Length: 144
Image (cartoon, rainbow, N blue to C red; front, top):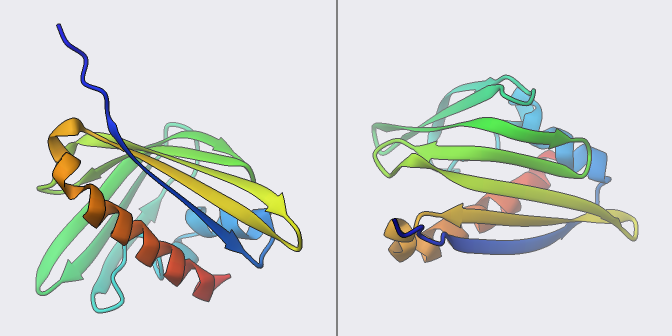
């Protein structure tokens, strides 16, 4: 049986905020709803976060009248350095991608590196996935 190698999206961004503040934004429902899996032109309908290893999350964003759910399970939570989770996007990536976020102090702020492993069957969406994370990183600045 051949094991398929995932396609990876890798991005790095610096923030003028502490590693703790950036890390906590991903797990705080009130802040996360403003940037995580949310398009500025859409309406975030619901956010549920069970911030523990094995806990699940769900974000439902209404986009052009269609509810899109982003869901997954936390695989690793090591505040403020590492956050890993599975990710399924309704009707797109139902089998579960893997996302790893690493945050290290850098100067007066921190540096965040994201690695999003995508199934090879979704390789054609690599550019869209990268643009999605760039948008998320841009919106994250507003909640820090």
